[in-house]
Length: 389
Ligand SMILES: *Cc1c(COP(=O)(O)O)cnc(C)c1O
Image (cartoon, rainbow, N blue to C red; front, top):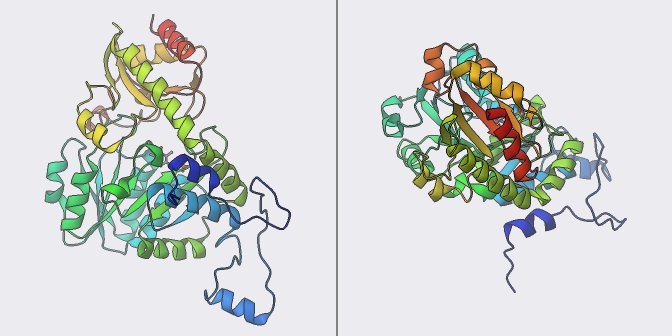
C-alpha cells in the first residue's frame, strides 16, 4: 500500500488525535492553559523533555494541526503559526537578524513589509537594499559582507510579476544567505518554494488559505533550526495565532485545492477576456503567454493564481470610473476571497508614493488589480464588461 498521500487527501485526513468523545470533525480547544499529572510531569514538560501543550501562547492542539498541514503542504521540516501574516513576517526577521545585519529584498513587496524595511529595521541598524523584479541578475551586486537574508514575493503585489525561485536560491546558496519567500499569492497548492531551494516560506493565511474573508492568520515554515529560533522568539513575545482562527483555517485547508483551482480557472478566463478588450492597454497574468515571465511561471507554478492586473486606457480617472461603475464585485482591500475584489492602487493603496516611486514598482495610473473570486464566471465578466463600457 502507498503510504504517501496526495495533497488533497493530506489536507483533509491530517488531523489531531481523536479525543475520548470520538468526534469526526476536529474539536475546538479554547483553553489558555493545560494541566499536568504531577510535579515531575510539569518539570519534564517545561524542560521540553516531553512534547506537551503548556500554554496557548506557546502551542495549542488547533494551531499545531494547522501548522502540521502547512508544513506537509510546503514540504517543510517545521513551522509556527501567527495572529497575522505581518506577525509571521516580523517575527521571522526579528528572530533571525541582529543589529548591523543587511537584507536584500525585491523592490515590490507587500506595503507593511516595505514599512518594516524602511521605518522600523533602521532603528536597530538593520538596512535593506532592493532589486527590481526584472533584474535578478543584478542581485549579487547588492550583497555585502553583513547580508543575511534574501527576501521576495512571487507573484508580486499588485503588479503580478514573477521572480525565478531557482535563480534566487542559487544566489542565496552561493553567498550563504537565508532565502525567505512570501508565498501568499500562490499558496502551497500552486507553488512550493522550498522545492526550489527556499529556507523559509511565510504566508498571510488571511488571504487564499482562509479564502472566505473571515479570519486573520499567518504562518512561517521551513528549516528546523531556523524555525526553532522563530518559535522561541514568538513564544516569548506573544504573536501566536488564536486557537479559534487555527480551527477555522485548518478547516479551510480541507478545501484549498478545489477552491484555488476554481479561482485560477476563473482568473484565466477574466485575463483572456480583458486581453481582447479595446479599452485595456495590457493584462498581466502569469498563465497568459503575453506575460514577460510566462516560462518561469510555468516552471514554478501549477496554475496562474487568482490575481489579474490590467491597465485601463485613460489613466487615473479611467481607473476611478471603472471602480465607480462596478456593480457586483467588491471594492475592498482584501484579496483571495470567494468574492471578486477590484482595487485601483494609484488612487488608493499607493497614492502617497511619488510617480517615480510608483513606476519603480510598475504601478501605472490606470492599473487595476483584481482578486478573482468564485462567483460564476459569466457574472464576473459581465460586471467587468458593463464597467468598461
Ligand atoms: C496580506 C499580505 C500580507 C500581510 O498579511 P496580514 O494577514 O494582513 O497581516 C503579507 N504579504 C502579502 C503578500 C499579503 O498579501
